[in-house]
Image 1 (cartoon, helix red, strand yellow):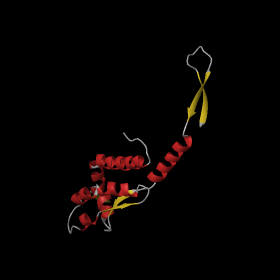
Image 2: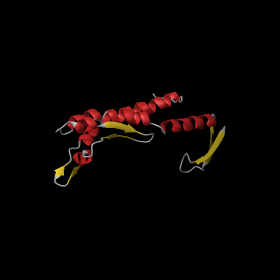
Image 3: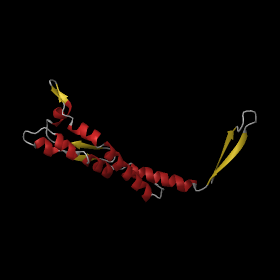
Image 4: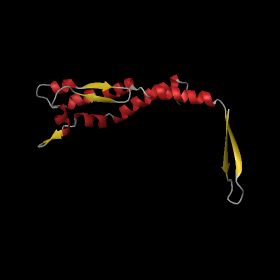
Length: 138
């Protein structure tokens, strides 16, 4: 149990009075937050699912000569980040442009289009981790 004392002034003319707040189960709460923090520090699967939402649109928006760029998009994820990558060497210049050529923005435009679904994926991933740790998520 931990007691916190604070000073507050309920009315401008009155003197400050001490309030006591008692927190019970502090260790359990701190332990649950620590566990949740460790759990959400590894969101690789959530990052991957969010990135996978972008692949169909990036492929659909890719300019086609051979179809190699459209077929090359894939999701990558680590504990702390996710992204959409391509193995073809010209993916960057096509996406972002180069002198004399505007970027096609296949990935950027798809992220903008899918932003609600991407946010929902992260919400679901973090909510699930909270539920596993006993937090109310409603």
